[in-house]
Image (cartoon, rainbow, N blue to C red):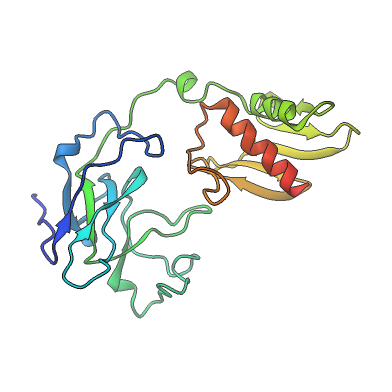
Length: 236
């Protein structure tokens, strides 16, 4: 069924940025098919491209603010329990949960992606099939390889010891003391466990307040190794 377009206020949709900070759209996604709908009309599998912040001055149109990584919607209601539901902006509880929708989450270490029901959303109607990559193309490096590359950056004398099947890499300093373990959690997050204090490395991007806002790609050995090495230095 054709979905109603958003008509509650004036919106402007500029072209999506194409610089390196923005991941390319899946090959099957047609930018010309993008439409603006209310958040409550987003369906599972729609590709979420942008939100529309409130304008600075009354009467001005709302301009699309593109996400650097578009994501497929997983719709539902806010859980009312995660950190985003409880923050100062929403403070969602059972009395007003009906005023919002969640376009992603909640999941393991993933809060609800909360939207007011009537908020405009730029989407490409889905489902959008993901680009087909072989396992070797998607994950060309082992966890131990990332740890070994990080050890080189940490300096002379740092060593790596592989866990069973190479699914973890243990980093030891030049004195032989075990400092950190690199691995992957069940939900797919790469982590560095520094002396038993886990420092999560999310698979999307690393801290844009410290680094340029680039994406943490499992195919980028050098970048991932750099993040691992910096995490060890900062938390050991």
